Image 1 (cartoon, rainbow over the protein chains, first blue to last red):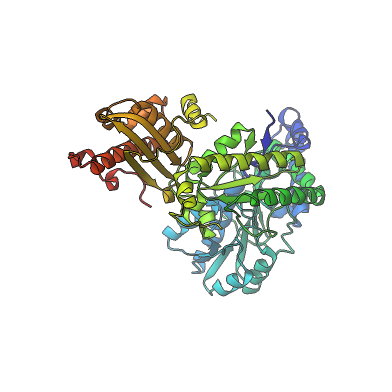
Image 2 (cartoon, chains in turn orange, brown):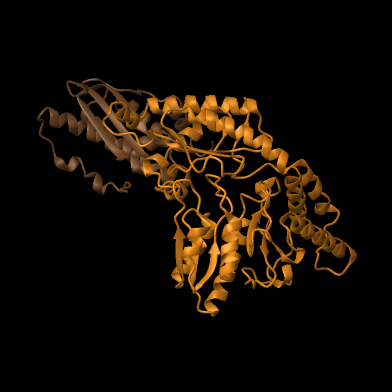
Length: 397
Length: 143
């Protein structure tokens, strides 16, 4: 059976070039960059080069890049660092959105328990927050605005440059969780007026367990991990050199091929959205065009997402859902609820996230497979029967 | 997927007794679409024996498998035996369910009880109300 991987927002396959880049740092250049001897110094030089390469992709200076264990750590450190500075100045108001990743939302919850006031902006039915909303929400005691670059479930891209400009003008620090955006759409921290940015290697064909935090010069960071003087003293622990080298290579590759990949992905995305949109009582989640080129997210009325994923897996397709059953909680995805989708509709969600490796044939097969799966599950669903019989009303027309 | 036993996957992929019984003698529907699962069980009863049973389920893989297994376990049995079917028995017959999916087997037990209650009500048969605990107390979600 053919295997079709459509869960690239969860994680990606490492590129061959990234693997090749990593290998010498496992057995040959294995020194500790903090060591004085030449193997150590060789590793230190490689680390510096990786920092420069990543900085070049983001439009910042090498010294503004801090390597972390991934996107979640970077989010935690960015938010907690700014909050600590805010507290010193008596500024305890933080602005964010209702559909951030849990690495952001749970960190904000923790701050709320410590007395911070967190304001979550509405993302509307199309999954986009506006710069005007941010401007209106900023108060004299606002210390931080943290808004994701692109949403992980529905792929909507936020007007980051305008939001950054609003924050810069107001003198409020701006953090963006750009885990889904970096390597997929153009991101330039200077032009976008970003003060802090989180990224993760495995979302752009790099390795897992490595990420980075960009912090503009002058933004004070607080350690999450105490230890040695690594990362300018802001993150203890011997650097994950093989991972960092591979991440740098993967990011360079992603940025080099971004335009070509985007063109290909847009055409596959159009085809997939068009095809799934033909299924009755289905709806695309998030803005039609202001979204990542590889993201397709749908809700299908009358069925539940986990069952859909299991059946698609049987057909060789790896996908994901915002259904409660896939998360182990009783509530469906907070992202879909933030769009205003009712619970029963949010349970029937499907996320397909593409990579440039996917083909048109795979998309055709996927459309047929989803159609069959939805139709089969509706056939055994009492909810669907009641809808057809007019005993309850369709939410999705 | 290793999340579920082979038995669960088998009953999910090839559910037994799917469908509707027209003019059923007892119909039970439990769950809530908001919570992501609804089970509906139809019983055909002759001389206190369940001669046919069908189900429809809106829900996850384990909800569909639990309904399928539960219908298998009560088909051909007396209503009294059906009333004794516990969620544990359903889960065990499926070679176990993940802890956070046990509520699916609870729903299956409740759906059968609810269908039997409907049969009693329709036929004016007296019964002990304690046999049918309120859904409010079942511990399932009430979103």
